[in-house]
Amino acid sequence: MVRIFGRIELDRLTEGMHSFRSARVLFAWAMLGLCATVTTSRAHAQDLDSMPKVAAPSRGDPQNGKRLYDKYGCYECHGGQGQGSPLSGPRIGPSPTPLSGFVTYIRRPTGQMPPYTRRITTDAELIDMYAFLQSLPQPPDVAKIPLLKAQPATGKR
Image 1: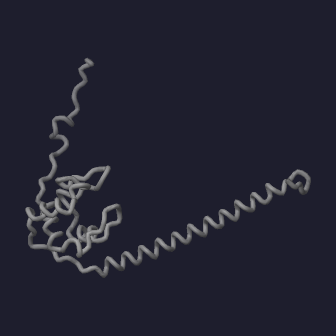
Image 2: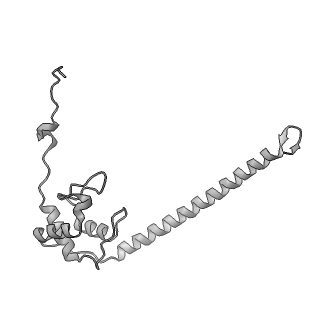
Image 3: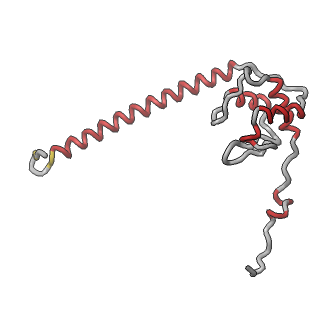
C-alpha cells in the first residue's frame, strides 16, 4: 500500500477508477443488449407481418380438435379443458383469443411453449383445435359455487 498526499491511499484511488471503468463497461453492455432487443423485436414484427394470414373458418370440427389437442399434448400444460395453470401454461379456453392471434402465437410463441410450425400441424388442424376450445362451456360464476361462498363464523373449532 502506497500513501500519497498524506492520508489518501493509492489503492483506494485506483479502486474508484476500477469501479468507474466497470460502470462504463456495464453501461456499454446494457446499451448493446438494448440495441439487440430492439433489432430482434423489429425482425420478429417483420416476420409476423410476412406470415400468411389464416382465413376465418366457417367452422372447424370440435371433435377432431379435441383429438388433436390431446395428440399434440396441449392438455399437459393447458389442462384438458384449456383452463390453464399458474405452474404450467395459461388459460386458452373456453373463450380463446381471435383465430389470427391463436395461430400466430402457436406458430411463434414468446414463452416456454415450443413452436408448432406448419411441418408439425396444419392450419386446418389449428382451426379444429380452435373450434374445440370455442365449444367448451363457460365456467360457472364464482358466486354460484357453494364451496366458495363465505360461511358464517360459528365460533366453534
